[in-house]
Every structure is written in structure tokens, then in C-alpha cells.
Length: 133
Length: 116
Image 1 (tube, rainbow over the protein chains, first blue to last red):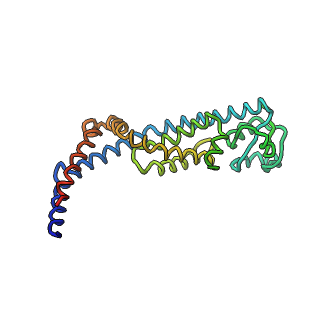
Image 2 (cartoon, chains in turn green, red):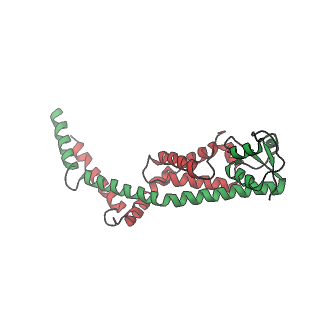
Image 3 (cartoon, each protein chain N blue to C red):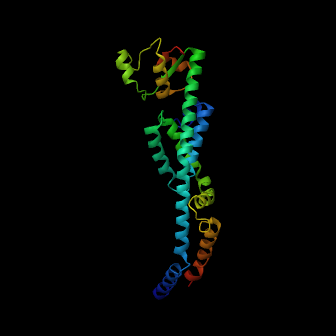
């Protein structure tokens, strides 16, 4: 039994290590998968950049539509990075309401804020009223 | 569900399509099993360099799409291999069909050597 198993294992290893055997084919396959991965990587920066640019434009458009129709938009989340403006204005702490914002700050706010369409529930959030410019 | 369905309801259609495309693109990375790791790397890069960082709900949606795209990942491997062969000048060596046929021929010998 043990001899038979040893013999078959030997034969199989011999097959795998033959010139045109398993390892050569697997090697070719791995090489081609590598080339495929590099092809994907080559296209990725273009695809991801395009998607992120479209996403940014869409969010800005949504915010501008909200301001146009409702006169305000809602900033949610805690990723609003407005430290400079906060210091300059000395008032923004993420919870207070402001009636007007400068256009540059508005654009930066749109760029950095997590936005979503206004709903009645959002009225209890952080409303920011802005002039569209 | 709260992390997946609710954020999807709150998004606009354009945002949904962009996120689905984002998850799908990483899901078809032509090395099966590595696509999620590559997606996480993508999150890091996007959050570091993009104007707007991805939110938690967006990453959840993209990851779900990424996992669901696994069949497409496997199905598209020959396409990516062909593209890689064109890009790297390996035309005669990266014929996916021929290589897979060779693998099956070799594996078909297995029962002969394993049988007692």
C-alpha cells in the first residue's frame, strides 16, 4: 500500500516537473494573470478619476439645486473640514445656523460636506442658508 | 441592512450608479480573491487624494457591489489576459483558452496516476 502510494506520487511529481508539464502551464497562466492585472492597473487611474470627477460635479449640482429651490442645504456628518473659516468667523461650531455664507466658503462647504436631499427630518440637523452668489 | 439599504434610499440615482461602477470596477480586478484588498487600497487612495472623501455608507455599498461582481471577475479574466498580452507584447503566450485547455489536459491525467 505504502509502496504503491509512493510510486504513484513519484509518477505524478515526474509528470508535473516534465518540460511541458503542469508547472510550465501554471507558470504561463500566472504570467498572463500578471499581465492582466497590470492591464487593469493601467486603466484604473482614468476610470477612478472620471468617476470621482462626475461624483463631485453631481454633488455640487445637487447642493446648488437645493439652494435654488429651498434657499438652504443641509450639512451632515462630521467630515466637514472648515477650520480656517471657523477661526476667521469665530462662530462656526457645527451646530449654529448662519444666514449667509461667502461664495468661496459655500463652494468649499459643498466640496467637503456630506450632502443629501432635504427632508423634514433634516430640518433638525444643521441648516445653513446661503446666497447662491 | 441599515448600513446598506437606508443609504441607498437616501442617494440620488447618479450617486448610486457611480458607486456601483466604482465597486464593479474593483470587483473585476483579474486576480480572484484580491479584489476586496484592492478595493480597500482604492478607498485609502480616494480618501487621501479626491476632493470629497467617501463616506462610510458609500464604502459599504461599494464593498457589497465588489463582492457581487465576483462572477464577472472570473468571466472577464480571459478578456484582461488578452488585453495584457496586447499591452505587453505577449500575443502568442497569453492565449487564455489555450492555456486553460493545457491545464485541463494535464489534470485529466490525474486519475490515471492516482488510481491504484
